Amino acid sequence: MEKSKVLIIGGTGYIGKFIVEASAKCGHPTFALVREATIADPAKNNLIQTFKNSGVQILQGDLNDEKSLVEAVKQVDVVISAVGQMQLPDQANIIAAIKQAGNPIKRFLPSEFGSDVERARAVEPAKSVWSVKVGIRRAIEAQGIPYTYVCCNYFAGYSLPTLLQPGQFAPPPPKDKLVILGDGNAKAVFNDERDIAMYTMRAVDDPRTLNKTLYIKPSLNVYSVNELAALWEKKIGKKVDKVYVPEEQLLKQIAESPVPGNIILAINHSVLVNGDQTYFEIEPSFGVEASELYPDVKYTTVESYLDQFV
Image 1 (tube, one colour):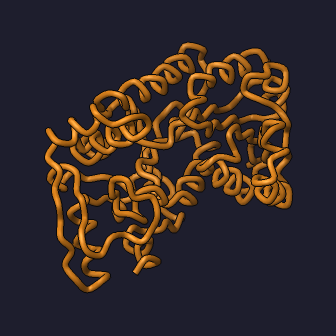
Image 2 (cartoon, helix red, strand yellow):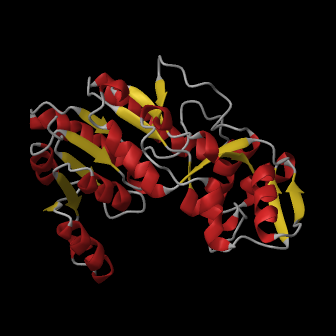
């Protein structure tokens, strides 16, 4: 089957660059919409050159430039948005461009790449942030645009190098003391970004994912923080002191923390206290699970991911 032509918006961002790489690797004619300022940014030169070396066509344009957006959409079959949080509302412009372009778009994948925002029971301010994604979903459906929503749960690169330690942003995970939100028993899902990108690209031409949510929830990557701690202790050969933060204390921290720390804490409350990534069953009526659809994808397990930090 001929591979769909794919446009990626936000392709130089955190998850976007992995999606561009996977699209090219999978043999899709790949287009990346890149802002003029990004093209001129020396810090992005190597990344953009890597894209070009992979056969990716760089299109200069902007989410807020209607003409460039419409012209980009006219060239492709599938549109993937990987824009960041601040640009989530601007995806309404992508929806408008898809309708204006006139060519039949086979699939639109909006910027999701996290928990399922319609099944999460988040407190503020994460609740309001995620409501923007819900609004984009409703707008896509109202316009009759074919879609796939990708819920990849935690990015391994954000979570595992620190074992989710509040305020710690660089590896390795602590070897003396771990701070654990809640009782540590809620299950979460941790996926390598390259695996997320590969599963995403496998889904774009798959009729089984049409108008469905693709959950990336491979069984070997479902862990509670207590289980992560035990795995880490086994790898480093020593016990680690654990400090548990009760939910009441965590909610107080969320209320008193400035942006963006309060958003991060609220997201972690949703996942690590409420168990919002794993409490529900994936029903065929609304979703499919990636590792079951694509068993040939050799994904990185949590256990093997942690080996690099030992």
